[in-house]
Image 1 (cartoon, one colour):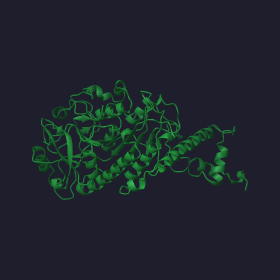
Image 2 (image 1 turned 90 degrees about the horizontal axis):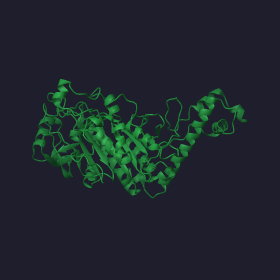
Image 3 (image 1 turned 180 degrees about the vertical axis):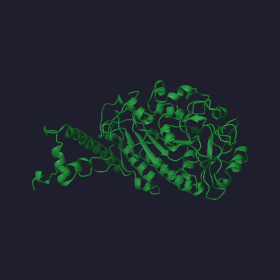
Image 4 (image 1 turned 30 degrees about the horizontal axis):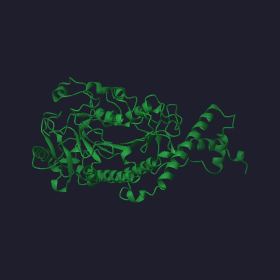
Length: 480
């Protein structure tokens, strides 16, 4: 059969529209995945990777990191949590290397993790993971009275999932036009001109975090198990597409020319990623065994990311940024059962990911950040056993990596006094954040290679606060 007899207008459209291969759409509506960046503000050629995990819905921080012992904090926890409080005897105690400051004065070092978080407790106790207490979107230092009087600028649409997720991944001080991960990649891209595959790689589709300000970089999306083959690129379709998009074809229409460029970019990116997986599969690490108990959406995503990092020599990107979302944390009801299941998935996936990174020799070069758009109320919304908790403000985040100061509780823990102090509610325990997310993001961006002088360009709200690197703050996230 001759090639020309197999090509119809419908076949051409179907084949050309199948060039997804995990790439995202640019502002022109056409795929652009060849944009790549690599960083190094110091030009040393070293490698670092950032893995950003959003626990969408608002993880309940109070039942993730729980006070223990005979003290005021534990007493207030039991009093106000009521029927959703977790008994001390099922918590996993953690060895806090430095007592956490408590809002209003004092400090405490006796805490435990949720019963589902045995792996995270081990990582913490091994100095490989830390927590950041009472963090959230914040525009300026805010007191309870200022909030009640409406005399201070607040993050727009507080307590809204979509708005707070957008601000959590970008910057709450201005109308959204970039994610801070995308802005960081743009700032660092000029020092690495080779462009084979974007450094912005998502395992959860398009997202706010990886949106670049100038549009020069696009997110490359992977499936949970890695790149999917280009649909329709086999048999007669492959012959047709290779002929249509051949560089020697000088009769192409402008649109066909754009598709040809896209097709070539996708194929190059696919080759790079396939090479990375080949390297990972031959390095002696048994990923299937390590992730045996993490055969979940998050586990599969982190398994793929681990393999991509293992095969880093397949491309010249020195600062890849990975993104994953895990939903299901909006626990307005059934907090105890639903959060237990969700945190178990997080625990198993993060533990396996750490083991994989260590086995392949990359743990010291990778930082993993895990957080939610906001926390949840200290008090439950019902007195029954299936009660939940509602949208709040300040929450908790985790950070893991060989470069961090592990085994610590950063920031300032709320005193758990409702109706006063940090609580913007009459008696629910909605805490004003004492550590703005821009503080944490600035520390991570600087570790990643952004000069301190450029941080205010990414996070304009920093100008409203004291220096995030001040010794007065309990926020020395990274080793010197």
